[in-house]
Length: 70
Image (cartoon, rainbow, N blue to C red; front, side):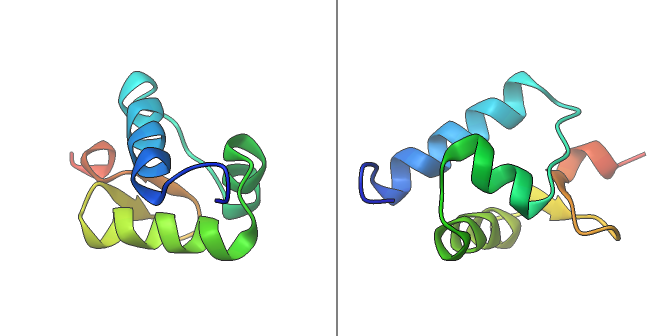
């Protein structure tokens, strides 16, 4: 995340999940999409799960937490 502050990366990821409610990404896909190394990607996704914005699915993908509510 050398070129971005952690907060700006989190805001960008949130914005993309809001713009595309059905977005479902595996960690490797998220790393490529947001140009993050593995450690930074895991940290950011972990923060978004802890804040209940994202949820990890049984297949290891990340989706908006409200997308899994029926």
